[in-house]
Image (cartoon, rainbow, N blue to C red; front, top):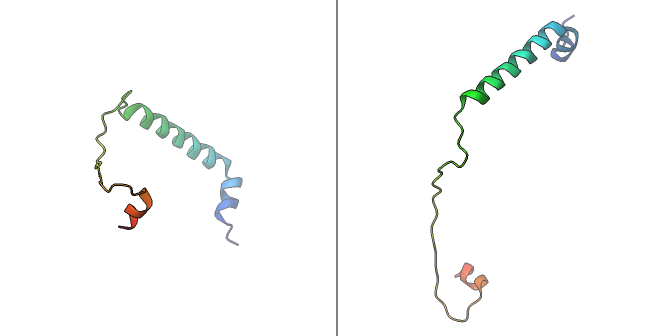
Length: 64
């Protein structure tokens, strides 16, 4: 009878510990390899929109 994946992981502790150890090592390696900056230069695109309509509230301008 074929057992499920969860059953295999729970009962095969050597494989689970090995996989966990490898995942931690790869995580630590990638943490040290990825370049980091204290305040990175990120240029976010933006636009300034201005509408001149005297005595109008913002809500009618959204519908206009």
